[in-house]
Length: 69
Image (tube, rainbow, N blue to C red; front, side, top):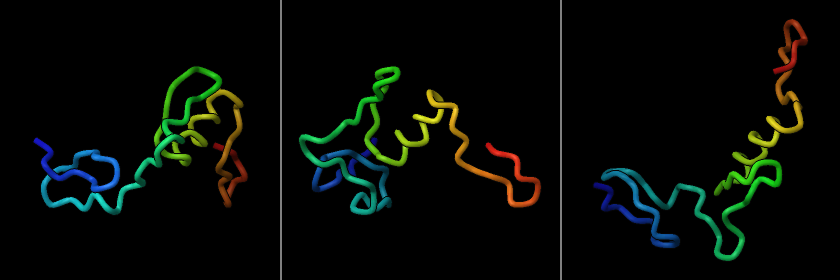
C-alpha cells in the first residue's frame, strides 16, 4: 500500500518517503513520448538517456582509457 500521495500530482509513495522531493509531472506537458518507439516518460532525464538507444550516442567517456559508453 502507498498511502503517501504527492500533493501536486497524486502519485503515491511508500510510508516514510517524501513525495515533495520527486520530480512532479507538470499538467499538460507530461508524459513525454519518445518519437522513436512511443515509450513515455515522466522525467526529462529519463527520455534523454533512453533516446541514446535510438541514436547510438554514447554519453559517458572513461577519463582513463577514453572509451565511450
